[in-house]
Length: 109
Image (cartoon, rainbow, N blue to C red; front, side, top):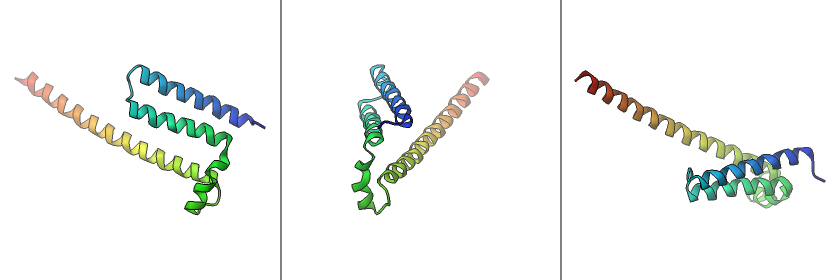
């Protein structure tokens, strides 16, 4: 039986997956990013309806329940993505500082 939670999450997964496809069509993401995000959202949809699929991985990793594997991997993925955003933001901040300095120097001349 499908629960309200599964329906809500499925609607979100479909929405997120559609955003990935639209971003690819608009050439805002690469094919590699399309494949990564597609795999992520499709996996989320499969795990949503067949959570026992993660049990073999849980046994290999010696984790109690299979769904815990998905939660742990999700948390690890979130930390990694936050780290990538931090690095990108820091790089952009440094680039912006260089541009502002150069504009300031040019205006003084």
